[in-house]
Length: 238
Image (cartoon, rainbow, N blue to C red; front, side):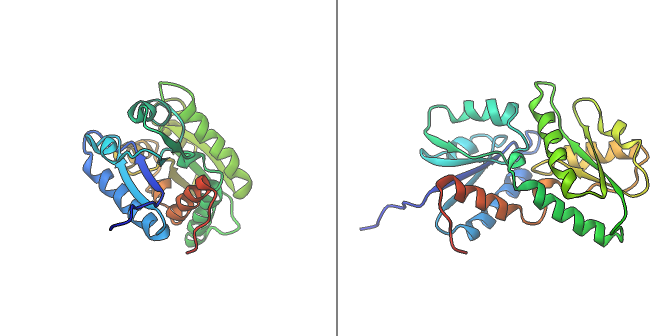
């Protein structure tokens, strides 16, 4: 007789991209596979909200839902809740609000600064975020993240710019000087990181390419694995 699978279930979810749902869906599946390797005592599932029917198909009563979002804004706070409905679940902290994320990003940026030969020199960092016309939470998450990052990167002058609200990314980028980096404050790559942000930087006269999105930096899978473990108050040996 086959024993029931009693492993805890985690459902990793992201916004995705309605105009082209498959690439972000595939990227989220790759992240879920990394997490499954890190958490063999769990059952890891993944679904974007943009792929028709995928989220509801993967939603299981009792699952820990991990919002791969940068803020607890409209989609993470309203749309996701509506899609879950009455299904019992445990909600993890959104990716962008994880207290461990600033240290992870600071480490990645220090590696980039070393690679560019800027060690010990001041430089500028533009945090390019989405913002929102629906409310202040998305922009506030980016501003709070910048505040947490500043003491970890004392050589950096950190500013923020937004796709959907002032100050726009183009406006914020116009004052950047020679040694400058742009970090897209996004969980997944999409049209904003591939098209909108580079176009805004070019329009501002900033010729360097933006860095990978925050959700694609080294160590992200380990950060999420720790967050899931903490949801159940357990530690998994790796």
